[in-house]
Amino acid sequence: MSRLDNNGQLDRATSSGNLAQRLEANKAYSSADFDGWLMQRLEVKSGEDVLDVGCGIGAQTLLFAKQVQPGGSVSSLDLSQVSIETLKRSLDPDDPVQAVTGDMAGLQHLIDAAFSVQRYDLAQSTYALYYAEAPAEVLGTMKRALKPGGRMAGFVPNSPHGLVELAAKYSTIPDPVYASLRFGPEVLEPWFKANFKSVTIDHFHNVVTVPTAEELLNYYRATTYHDATAEPRLRDEVAAEIRRTGVYSYEKNGFLIRGTDGHASANA
Image 1: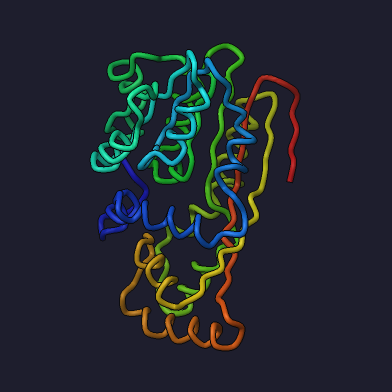
Image 2: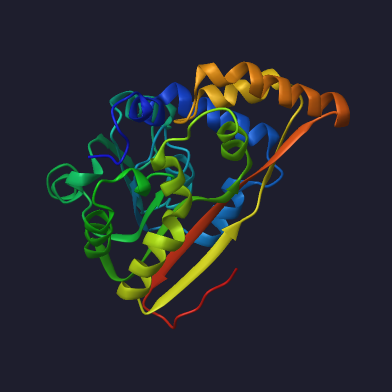
C-alpha cells in the first residue's frame, strides 16, 4: 500500500515514463553525479547479493548488476509492472538480476515465494520507502533478510527542494510530498538508530540548472505534485529568471542512511 492518495499521485510516482523523464532531466542538469555518489557509499562488491526495494525502471539495479559480478545477484521489486518490464529490457543477458512486480507491503512474501536468493549482503531502497503505508514493517523485513554482518541503506529526498518551493507559490502541494522531504530525519533516522549499532548519515547536495522554462515544465509535469493550473505563472517566473541570469537553478537534495553492526557514527 502507498501513502499517496488516489487522485493520480501514485500513478505519476510509479509511471515508468515519468521516472525516465525525471532521471534523464536529473542527469542532464544536476551539479552532482548522483549515481557515482551513491555507489561509492553503498560499496557493493563482486559476489554480493543485493535486495533493491522499489527499484523503478532499474536505475540502481542496473549498476548493481555489474558490481556484483562474478558470483553475486540482485533481487529487485517494484509496484509497477511496466517499470519492471522496462528494467528487464535494459538488462544484458548475463546480468544476474531477478526482477518482479510487487508491493513492498508484501515484501516478505516476495522474498519467500518469488526470489531464488533470500538473504542479502545489502538491502537498499532509493526514492521509494516513503511511499509505504507502513514503512517500519518494510524496514523490518529488509533487516531480517540480511545475512549476518549484512548492511542496509535508504535514500530519500530532503529539504530544501527548490522545485517544490517554487510550485508551492502557485498550487497546493500534497501532504505526502512534504512528508517525503521529512522522511529521512523523522522516520528513517530513529528507526535505524534503534535497530543498528552503527548508523551513518550522508547528505546529498545538488543544484539543478535548466536552460529553458519548457525544460523545467517538462520535469514538473512528471512529478507527483504537478498542477496544470499552476503552469502559466510558474512558467512566467522561470522565464523571467532565465532572461535575467541566463538559467534557472534550484536545490534538489537527498538523505542517505546506512546501518551495519559496527560502531555508531554520523557524517553530514
